[in-house]
Length: 124
Image 1 (cartoon, one colour):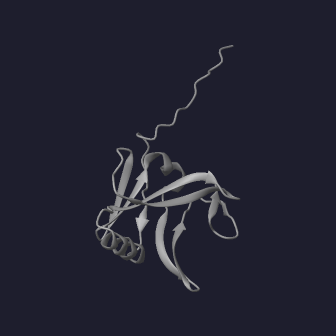
Image 2 (cartoon, helix red, strand yellow):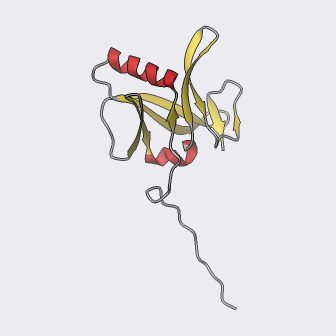
Image 3 (cartoon, rainbow, N blue to C red):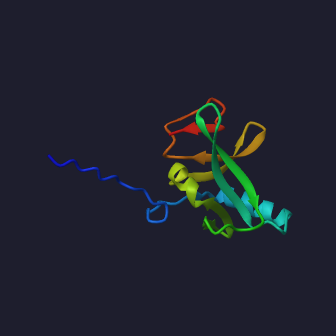
C-alpha cells in the first residue's frame, strides 16, 4: 500500500485576494490626517496577535512604503496593508463612524468569527 504524503502549501504571493474597501467617511478621515501631516502618505492596517479574542487591528500612519505592502485607494486616500496580514483581513471594509462622543475607525471583517466586547480584537 502506497501512502501519499503530499502536503498542500499556501503562498501569500500566489493567492488571489478579494481586497479591502474604504468607505467615503474613512477616505475623508485618511485625507484629513494626510493634510495635517505632509510627511504622511496614508494609513497602514495590520494585525497582531493580542487581545482577548486573539488578534488586534493596528493602524499606523505611513511615511515610507514597504515592498510587501498592498495599496488600496479610494478618492485619493491610501490604505497600505502588509501582505502577511491579508489572510486575516481580506475582504474587510474600513469605515470611520461616530460612536457616542467618539469618532473611530471601524473594521467590518467577514473573516472574524467573534469579537471581544469592546470591539478591539477579533478571532478567526
